[in-house]
Image (cartoon, rainbow, N blue to C red; front, top):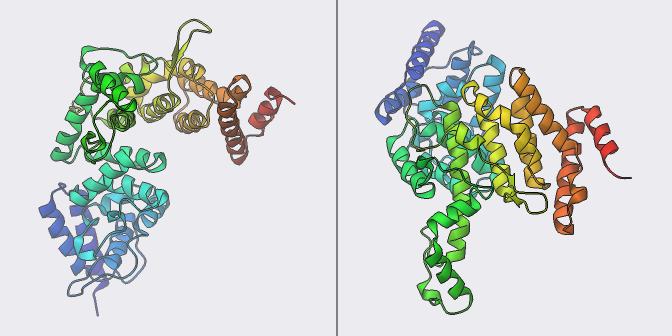
Length: 413
């Protein structure tokens, strides 16, 4: 019969070594073998480390057996439960075991078809903790570059963490950033079209715009001569220009996530980026009636970058003072309202302070305002109205009757 005292001693020893894991594949292999050799605890786990290792021992292959017991798909949810129960980051003790090929195919390996909800959980977990092997790298990049907002935003958070542990991944992202924002190092501050216009103009100068226009008029190259877009044949100039804005927005959010968690003295792959630079970007400029307004997607991404930066005291000091002004410059649309709600949640999670309280107040008042009333285009007005109604439901779920009453006061009969 297994000795329970020895079992607990073995679990404790492995937990300490997992905490000290250097992130290498070689040491991960050793730790994985030790996990397979563990005997059961014989009683309920007494710590988060024991709970995590017991879970993984059940899920991953045992010594002398071909496969583990139980699904791999529930690992992120179970780790979240352990984190909540013990008030720690339980992923720390799962780190070297995630992606163990001996366990068979992992759910996240089908990165094109995994659901948004499951993909978001895996992206955060793997980005923060896992060995950055080819499967993890592929998942993070596919999620980050090609999936919808509910999944690429968590992938951006995870990728920012993974950049610290993997040199080749950093070497991939750094030149991509410099290609999209080459003038940032010179201190250039873009206007309201800070991604959609700036990135397109830099990557597709006038001569390429001319080619695109000729193509639209039937004077350009034939279908067989179309330029490849993002490495996929058959893409048009217009497709690649639009993809540039898409990738540019993602890169700015990734830079914000990295900056928000960057340690003192740590170098960054995002040359020229800073919270101060981001805070300097306006979303609307010009005289009334002649204003230039940011693309609604650009505006929402700027707000989501603020969401990342306010979570760190070092970067929050640069963006908190400008949030009221930037919020007042936003247009009325569903996408922007969703970003404002995310920013409000991040501000509420901060310790109270004058700048934070002022910023939060401005965000909540903007959300209450029926800005859709002044939108002349009926299609855009419908989109803005829908976002406003979603905000009303959000306030109601939070039990904020004062805000819903205020929305009724501001809205027309």
